[in-house]
Amino acid sequence: MLLRLLLALASGVLLSPPAAAIADPAASAVEVCVVAPRVEPIDEGEAIGVVPIASPTLVVVEPLQHLRIETDGGRLLWSRRAAPGQVLPSLLRWPLPPLQPDQQVVLRLQPIGAGVDAFAHVRLRAADAPRLAATADLIRRLGSRPQPWMAAINAALVDADVPLAWSLLYAPQAPAAASIEALRRELLRRGCGDGPPS
Image (cartoon, rainbow, N blue to C red; front, side, top):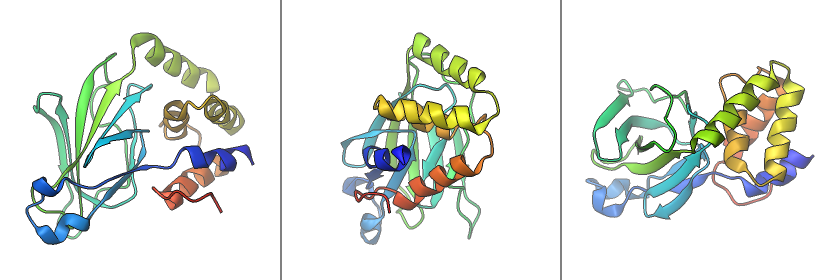
């Protein structure tokens, strides 16, 4: 199946909190695998991604104990901490107003077991206005049937536009369908591995 073959192009990004930021040396082995949105590593514990959708969904394989969303300058916009003995959901819908064109925010991700000051950082920048508008228009046109959604995800992968493919796959408007859920499960199963899909 085309989607399964192209999954090799689209595994997640593994982030380790920078050693200098980890209060507990025993927590240095803790890593965070970001599946969506599609981001690229730029430094130890840091990644960046341009998102073609104004309200991106965050998908992380490892359980998180704390998530912060900040401005590029460090001002806190939103924060959520798991209750004692619990973890944050692996799939988190965008909790803020939609991103504006070219707006940049920083996600600070703290996995279970990390030191109190250990965060992996993901810089997200919204695409320009035409790209955001085109994605919003595509989502409106796809409607509620799963076949057009799968075709659009396939088309984005054929074009090597993984950010768009994963934005569509995890969009809240995507229909609840076995084919879409199966692809989501496969991505989570693959996580940040480099091997081919089974």
